[in-house]
Length: 155
Image (cartoon, rainbow, N blue to C red; front, side):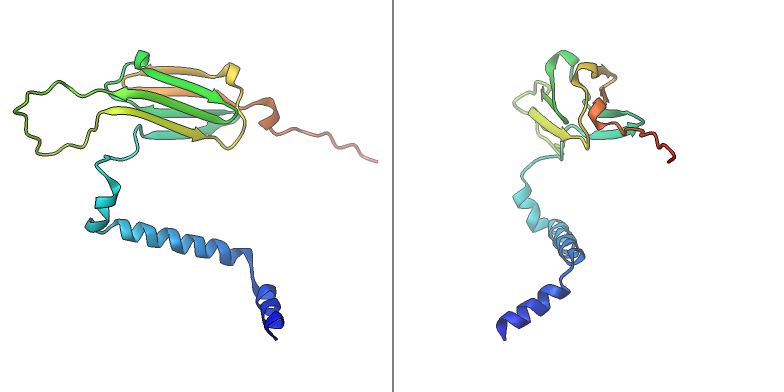
């Protein structure tokens, strides 16, 4: 009887149920983080740094990272397969020992962000420029990631 009930439940199981349950759990975790007591577990971080936008146009990804006050020489950039890694250090201004903060949202220290893109990229054609605190990385897709057009012959 137990096996029959398990098989009946299995026949009613759908992939949608799994994803709905995962979405419900994600929403529950986000709800918990809204409470001040839960902020104790998050540490002093002011958020993910640097903030990044990724866009796609035709066969190219554009990755733009906000890096105010950081010189291009102080950044490290590496690309492997479809993963881009940005590393660097945000330094704080020298302060007097009597300095008292009323608000501190800009943390100093080393950072590293790894961003995985949806398709393989051609590392040899990648280009990066830093201007006015914005790092712009141009990442052309690899030939293997581009859609192939196939001719159809009439029979």
